[in-house]
Image (cartoon, rainbow, N blue to C red; front, side):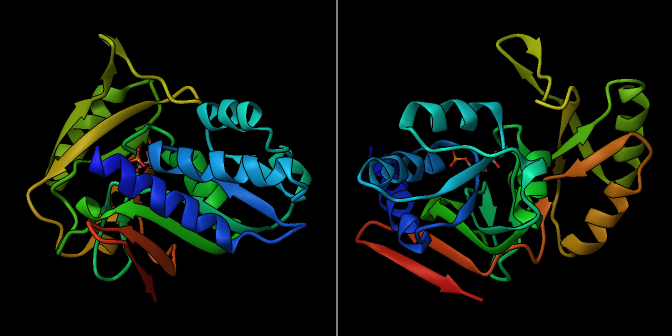
Length: 224
Ligand code: DER
């Protein structure tokens, strides 16, 4: 589909930001898939890199494509992280977590010197919030946590996949929280974050400075 073509184009473009010897934060999702496929091809021709995966699914792809991996505990900083997003606003703020990897993605993203986001243009929005904000919560007492989130002004829905409660790579649940409109994502993130039972939110604020957007004709590279 033309969305896949856009994802492939921007995923492959992001590889241009990777230099020999770099340690890379490997994001998660179908756009990152194309970046990893291209990166694997360059590794097979001699590019020397190592990656920290932000999900078990990404770890599997890295092994499939021959991208050397390193434990997060073995590196202090990452040279660059490359990841996707579910929504991107004009201030480079993101909603992420559609794939359920937001906690590790945020930890990897935070440890990177340069952070690159790759999206197709359907992800660009004027204001965040059409996409429900994924919130990772501990399993114990999740119903009470959900009630607290209602009082912040959202409609939280426990995420199910294939009829089963989704459990993240960290053993937590995800509540997809639909807000009517998010005028101040910073305040909202803080409100959600300090709610008892919440581990992390899918609001990635001030966490990227380069966004590569795939379009009908070519792509746009946004720099903050
Ligand atoms: O779950 C995530 O945060 C992914 O990065 C997601 O936001 C992007 O997934 P996609 O590239 O498959 O659209």
